[in-house]
Length: 338
Image (cartoon, rainbow, N blue to C red; front, side, top):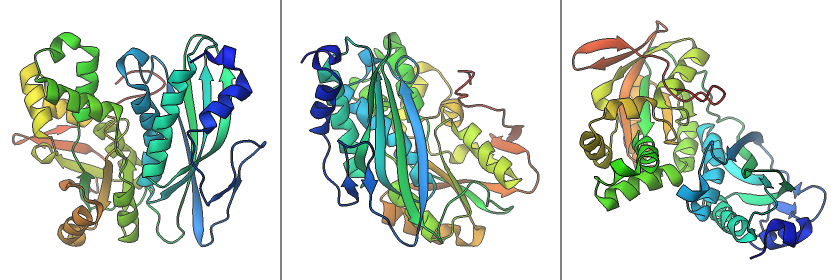
């Protein structure tokens, strides 16, 4: 395919529009100055935005463009899931160097559309622009939620159970293997690729979020910056503390094996790795056992209780009989440091 400079702005828009499917909620999509969206009664509107920047969030030489498109959409959908909402429509801004091959953007759009369609969202429009040096995919996603059933970070109470969907840390292990090819060479290829795919193609927990909102979970957040950072966000918003059982952290067999082979701490990756896009949430203690069984079936995802909310604002981890204060681990987007 030609470069975007050769195709031109309107040619590029026409090409990428081929990858976008119609939605009954989008009355007027790509082609006018603004999208026209159907009104939905008895709902609150959720809105989020997240950008994926080349050499910050991804490396083009390390990721399939279709998976890149999926990932860019998925990280936004995960925010809507964490609020108990349903993704509705997305606006996508692509900023790319003039020499960018249209085929690259075309494949990114295939991934964007596939992820949006999987979770019931529509791509309603956006913008394309030329910039020097690096590719940026910037998405604004709008969702909706039942006005009487909304998940926030601020409702956790002392005595509540702390729980998490899926497993934690595999994405971080995948990122490590991607960035350290010599280490990856010592890991069984199928296992290494599964870890890398967990990093490249996260699966937002939309069904779980909606179930939790409908069944009165007290707080929730998606694990994007790292478990340690995200439990802290809940505690600070709710003015509470947490006691975490390290042995209860849901670590997959693949992650445990890879960590052992690399002689690194699986617990550290689980606590501070980030980009799992699982849901971290709290439930009233007396309802936890029944709720977790029902949620696991309803959302088709394993769910684990890993701790309890406390009155004191410290965040503590119990590991091998020792209680330690959890440091401020996780990813800081502005400092670029853990």
